Amino acid sequence: MKTLHFLVIGKNQEILDVLKRVIENNEGWTAEIQSDENFCYEYIRENHVDIVLLSAGLEDQFEKDIKVFCGGLDKEVKVIDHYGGGSGLLKNEVYSLFPNLQE
Image (cartoon, rainbow, N blue to C red; front, side, top):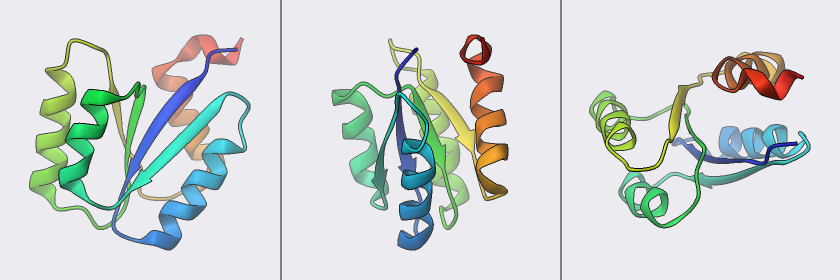
């Protein structure tokens, strides 16, 4: 099983806590949550991150900037805009990026 490392970014701590719990409820998935956008760039540069999950409350410009930043890295970091919809939707979003996980 492939291990996936998530960085979940958002402004609502309760939502971040729920997302961390939902992500880590899947075998091999780990999550770091963060509400400080400025810290995220350094974290992504210095840590293994497979998926940046964008949650509620972020400014449009930050969302655009973080996508450009992730796309310009030497390592592959995928970005998911996730604004709710439950654990089933989240799994489908992840599986669409990593179809081999469903095997």
